[in-house]
Length: 369
Image (cartoon, rainbow, N blue to C red; front, side):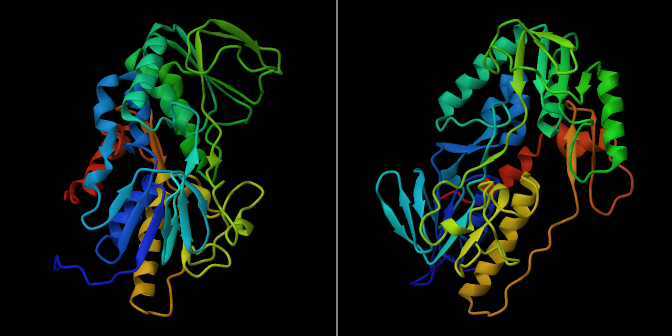
């Protein structure tokens, strides 16, 4: 491929530099004038954030500078405050005209599932401070038995085998969603082997009196009347789509749950040149693997539009897929096309040992300017 760019290329503004945003920007870097808008100093590989919490040695590994992502395009460190079908207005006041826009702002989630700090130093300080509190705690309460709650429980026991860890959830079982009963059964079996207590089917009468991730012994009571005493707790639920910037002609596509309705081509409803991917859309669960798949799909459709091709691809979500490590060597999961569920060694090989950092290294490794 020639390194000489055409005299004119359409401008594609990608709003959000998370898991999906970096991939769609990278995929279009040679075909358009790509502008990636992201307020954070560096990309944070959230998938490894739980490991960094229990072992801060991992902290330098989970950040990737945006300046190595693109060869021709540029990254603007700023926050989009208003986006319509033709323009992206930034908090600084700058306005970017766009031929195509990809909304990839993802979601917020309680720490340590995600961090909302925009600077590397502040992010690291948050992890280290919480690590110190966690290291000193004998009893840890995790509210939420989804992937984050289960993975965090596994990380804690992997690092501190003597800590008492309780995972509580209002649901009657772990890991809600379209997953195999055998997966839940295998994860429950491994959690039991690890000595992790599950308390399911009852909510707390009131929230713990301390802030999540901060030291302070407390006792709470479930609606069923069971008392729980812990020295520290984390909230492991609460995905909130980030879509408050939608303006004018895009705002009607936002649902009551703050998601963005999209067409089968992943265009925002009512729009020809605006696409949306990842956690903010009404298709697929809020998981990194789906955001990455949608990023590649949308990049292909924008390439088709740039080339003047009339017919775009229709997105077909992949079947349910999930890989849940419980520490570096345990866990389970299910993947399309495979009978049964994944065992611990397979999960360790796929995800548990390096938490997919090598995939992110590949994305950032080829764009040095």
